[in-house]
View 1 (cartoon, rainbow, N blue to C red):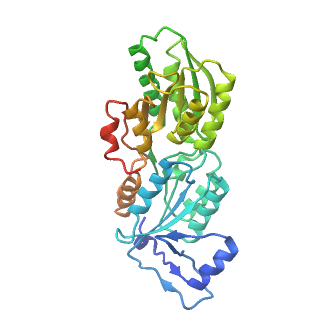
View 2: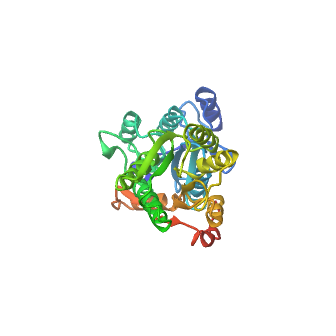
View 3: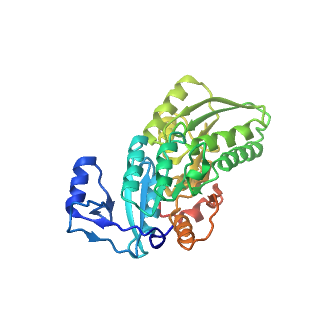
Length: 349
């Protein structure tokens, strides 16, 4: 949906924007400059925005992890003025109400496209309906939504989290077989991500399916550690105090893993394939891959944060009036000691 087709016209008025800031408490940031799109019919001194630029409103759920920071960078580096875009970016700071407020702000500003990574899957029907009534396509990234009407959003881009969970389980099975432990009881704890998030749901389900094929795998506990290092350390310390023998830690992102490793060491234990607790993580950020290469983390399932170009290709298709798919999966793999060092050379995050 292009501006030429909709006939929309946007105005950037400093006075009107300042009033909007005071009224709504919202700040819009682009390349270090404060700005936004508003229309105030009481003003006669408004400056039309360059009609050749496509306006994209992005609501990022937060900055809870290295992965999320990389995901944000990928978006901000793609939707630049040089590439023909005007980006309005909002950080929801892990609060759904902040995201809904941002989406409604984008709607009122009549952006061309809304892009957002939903904090949880539930609770979006009303605001998505508002976007559709305004004629604004919505593109989801990283996480999904549960809605009675899936046509409320145009496309989704992200990881196959269910397959990621399966890859973690299959990798664990391979290592246990190499160690000759495929028949002995294996005691497992799982640090899950934010409750209700697409990543946590998919990774948990995928791993559980593989675990169900192995009668000797005993999942002691699955606990929400919020995708953060601090919570990962806190929950791992609790698990270590509660269970005498933990053989395997499945940690659903690298930040939680970093915290959990601190807890393991504080308890006088050694993490690693040949240590006391085998650790399998998700995301494969550079610092984690270094630990994989050292054997501290046994394996790391990649979650690709570089989704900016995927979003851009979808928008380009929509601008050209071409059909787009509903789902776009980014490419990913599992990293072990055999291939982690090579991958580190290409990582910037």
